[in-house]
Image (tube, rainbow, N blue to C red; front, side):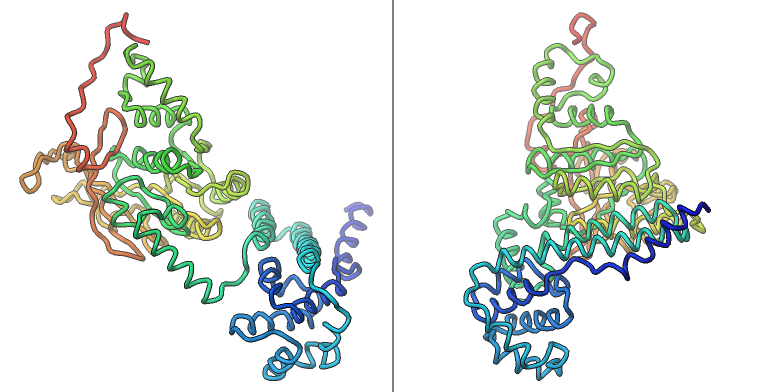
Length: 476
């Protein structure tokens, strides 16, 4: 190692101990003093700061005690603060009686408390950035961690610093109960877009209440059942009908193939004729109209193959920060690459499913991951999928909040069920629902459009006209 590199390493290792992190103890005193003389400013401060934003240990203890008093609906002043600290045995740790009295003595107004709180936010962010950077630098020089795992760790820590100052860091029961009641009211009138992503299908939304934030949803089926088509329907419905930005990670199909499917489904244009360039001229106007509509849809497609969970997580975080995505669709789970040195494929898949669930929680959105079922389905008389059919299942069932299967009886030559025609019938089997009942939703699969529709609405409509291959002179 060169002498210059040796000096750099030594300098980096000395930085944490030799340089005081950004801080403003006097401003901290002003903020705490303002909270003691004006209760009205307390909620404003709580929206901006948490105890870890204070540099001095004494101030962290005082702020935490104020939070407790506020949540108990107790007055916040020098007397109540002193009493509560005494009860906790923290008077000396908080600086002592004289120090606590001084907090409000030299402060005449709380008018600038928000400005002062924002100064503390900035100091706190800088301090956390320095601390995180030093950790990453040390780990990079040590060379004990995989480079890409370290990169993911660095990105995650930076993201967490940003997130910690974009939302409250605590939740009292008063706020939590209020949020729950707002959710209940919204569900009663089917206006739950702020709490969940609607599926766009009446029967399915009735049973699931939409795709809930922080949930991992597994959509599994055998090949040719329509996994990709249904996943794209969910993405299209969210983006086109509800204007919710969606990220689609397609590990199997190219972007242009997905676009053709989206156009076909949205415009009810024959997918085969569209793909082969044989769409009749009479459909040209509809094609361009649909293309223009989808052009405005907030759908972001990434078709890189064999992506690792680290890559998907990094891209998803960036899309969340830049585009505020509200839904992630991954096609499909078994094509993802898990952590290196996995002992078996099952453990690799298990690590992937755990990471996807963690991603859903971290970004506060639903993640839909398509998955393949094993061949056991084909060998049974009853072709309806079961949880045990999940290929290389590992912890997929355990990590998922919702597991859905697609079953199309018509595909297996079954013409009737309970006296009803199975033409186009797609049974969406809700085999697992962590926060609700299991069951079944019935949709109609229109193969020529790569489109799923509400079953009952579809059955009341006239049969869609069959599209014949056009003569050469009538082709676009």
